[in-house]
Image (cartoon, rainbow, N blue to C red; front, side):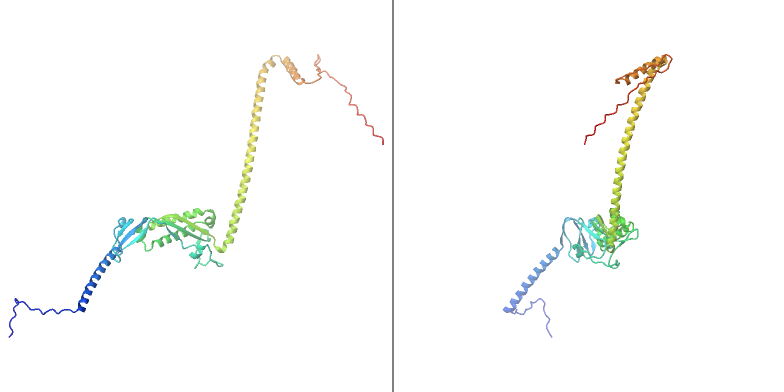
Length: 362
């Protein structure tokens, strides 16, 4: 029967076996490797954490997303320019938003098919005998005509939260609003108004409609500029050119007619004014003369009423004196005592005939 073991007694350990040189070298190599791995892991942790540093530049704002949701509510979720930190992806990520940079959107409807390279080079692609709806875009005017038109809009982001998170692709939403505004405005203007008569009014209508849509849909942007380019269908370019030429000729003829009308009216007005002035001057002179004679008559009337015969004789003498002042021979025949007029007869020889010139002898 075995004896019970006493736990208080020390247990003898087997003697350690001395490691050979190869095992000892391997052990030291493993310890060095573990130290290097630990150091590398520490560096990787710092690199991982440092990858969350990012910079928001001037004219930008940023939003941190934690598992896809914004960190913060409303304006507090926006990060201003400066250095910021977030947990690295996939825990957190950030989105930078250019709030002062001018964004641009161009309508896709209403214009013929053209590549960016052709447009940049100023080349116009070939066209067929008619417009192909599958390739070429166009707009329908209020008077039932077809033209090519496109709108280019420049805008800035006013509300970054709505712009980024309320729409899957806000830039496409802005472009759809531009297309809607262009088609809406074209349906309310005639072809002549869009191409020649009211180009600015058409552009203003597109911008007004676009601004309304942006506010209704709460896109979070501000429209800075809207320019609209419109041309007739390329297949009818010559016909529209003739119409424009006829309009120019009509305008030129009307301007010439109005100019001639103004010249005639000015000349007639000046002539009428001159005639009126002459008539007014003559009227004033006649009125003054008649008034003077009337005043003279009123002064002489008492003398005539007192002694009429003497008055008449005096006036006659005065008148004859004035009339005959420069007359060389004066003959005065007063009436006879019985009131009969005397008669004076002068017999004057006729002018003697001129002497005939003698003709030279041949």
